[in-house]
Image 1: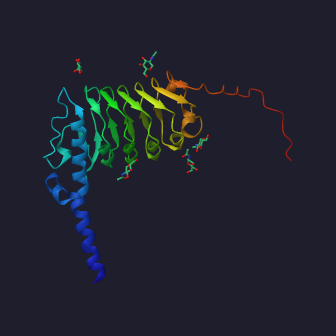
Image 2: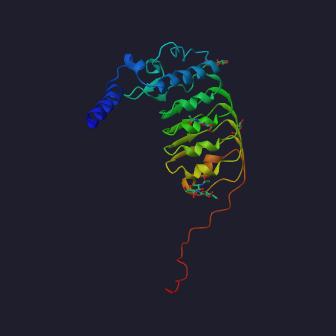
Length: 227
Ligand SMILES: *[C@@H]1O[C@H](CO)[C@@H](O)[C@H](O)[C@H]1NC(C)=O
Ligand SMILES: *[C@@H]1O[C@H](CO)[C@@H](O)[C@H](O)[C@H]1NC(C)=O
Ligand SMILES: *[C@@H]1O[C@H](CO)[C@@H](O)[C@H](O)[C@H]1NC(C)=O
Ligand SMILES: *[C@@H]1O[C@H](CO)[C@@H](O)[C@H](O)[C@H]1NC(C)=O
Ligand SMILES: *[C@@H]1O[C@H](CO)[C@@H](O)[C@H](O)[C@H]1NC(C)=O
């Protein structure tokens, strides 16, 4: 008896999720409605002279049908793509942190100003965060250290201030980092994921010069006794 009931519940939960067509979205989860809120909040806060966000109609329940939004086959938003070079201006909103399946946030080369919302640290599936060439100010949120899948972090050419959060050294997936052309201060982390990056990633800030790297040992050092 119990196993049958359990099976039924599982089937009910999983089948609509996997086979859901876009029309079925209303039967899905609350989270999807939050997605609409988040995207619409972004739209309201960004001036959009080229109308690239025009299809982000909050009255359409499924954001997956909106232009510039990519979803996975479970109708969760994974990508807000092609919003680079779109001449968007305004501020990023905390609600962006509710797009919890987002993998790519590409808003580079616009006129976005204000702070980077610390809520972006909730986007734990994020692979790429590209906010370079905007007018962002304020600190790099420490919460970005929670992004344990992040491979690309490009925040260069903004007006970001404060220190580089040490937690970013713990993002072991990080492959590409560019923080150049900002107003960052303090030390450049050199350990963890940051051991990959050269000074090019940090140039034109007010960061402390790292100590010179010791020269590579060309001649093997004195043999130590095996004691
Ligand atoms: C971007 O917007 C500015 C004014 O806000 C305008 O001067 C400029 O021509 C626009 N650029 C493009 C490529 O639309
Ligand atoms: C998102 O992040 C903010 C600040 O980092 C936090 O206060 C909030 O509780 C988080 N929300 C969720 C749903 O995890
Ligand atoms: C990095 O991760 C290690 C191990 O989880 C932890 O002990 C350390 O405090 C973290 N460092 C920072 C700066 O958060
Ligand atoms: C240095 O970065 C600032 C932005 O913080 C920018 O305005 C300036 O043009 C950059 N300087 C150079 C030489 O690239
Ligand atoms: C890098 O060093 C800092 C202290 O200097 C430490 O807090 C952090 O956890 C280290 N990161 C890794 C990945 O070991």
